[in-house]
Amino acid sequence: MTPPSRKAVLNPGDARVVRHVLERPGIVRSALAEALDLSAAGAAVMIRGLVRQGVLVEAGRAPSGGGRRAAQLFVRPELAHAHAHTVEPGCLRSGVVNLAGEVVASTEATLEGAGGFPEAVERNSERLGRAVKRARVVAVVVTAPGLPEPNAPASFRVPWLFGVRPLDVSSVPSANGAVCLCSNAEALLRAEAAVDPAMYEERALAVDLCGGATAYAAWPGAGGLALDLAAFRPAPETMLRAALERKVVEASAEPESDLGPRLKDTADAIEALAAAEAEGDPTAAGVVDALTDAIAELLAGVVRLVRPSRVLLSCWAVAAGLCSEDAVRRRVRRLCPPGVAEAMSLQFAEPDVWRPAVGAGLLALGRWLEALESGR
Image (cartoon, rainbow, N blue to C red):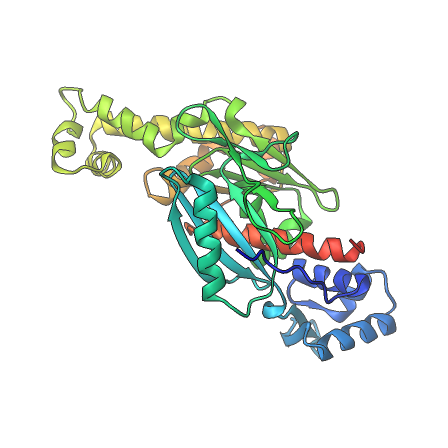
């Protein structure tokens, strides 16, 4: 299999401009000049050249308090692409992500069988290459519900249903042998910043409770910090869907509960739980209440540690309508000190299976630009 190309077409100065526009889509010339510490004339020359080359595009007009509205700058989406591989229990989702955060081609493969992860990557990479033959792929990234190993650059600690299993990503094809790794939480934050650049201008926290339990905190101009929530209490594994399904089966043995009969009618334990809880079954309500408490306690513990002004939560139980956003929000605020609770804005990520790939792809493309900027 031919590895993705990483041929550079931007000089370090160009890459610096492009990276700033990528991180702040819609920025105007004056704001870009200020961010780069350039004179208005110097910035205008660089921007004009990049627009002429088709690297940057001017589209739309920024809001103005008066006078002529300035044109907004964006990176041309087709300039570069990333292969983004998202690891899930039993499944590998792969997509080609462009500089606009769009998935222009996608495919999936099972992680089961003798070939496992390396074979799934091989199949998906070949499929993506056939689907988008002219895409200029400059970066490859793998994102997972766990965290990259600090002492083993090509592996992840991935929490499945029991314990932690290592995942070797050294088989992923890349032109220079380097593959970006990131957690779902970091990818989640980057995907949100693509539509709301102000996310990176405040102390922000992203928490992923979809298939794993990780968090990523970012400070303006000071980088970020990845957190493995496995050591936090309550234990994150109690929030995994499969673990909750086992709890529902256990709870269905209660003689006065409606869960038992409902489980006979449907093979989906979560569906049975939601239906029984909606009809006021006290056993089902107790399970949902305990799950909501566990999510709120875990999130509040991270918030007390990081003290963010903005929090983004991705949680399968909330997305499925099992736990309400308002209930989680109220309990988190109750568990946080008054000053922290008042300064914090908590929002919930929209359910989207491709969101981690989008965020991870944009992170990888940003690192590609950083490498060009530094002359590597």
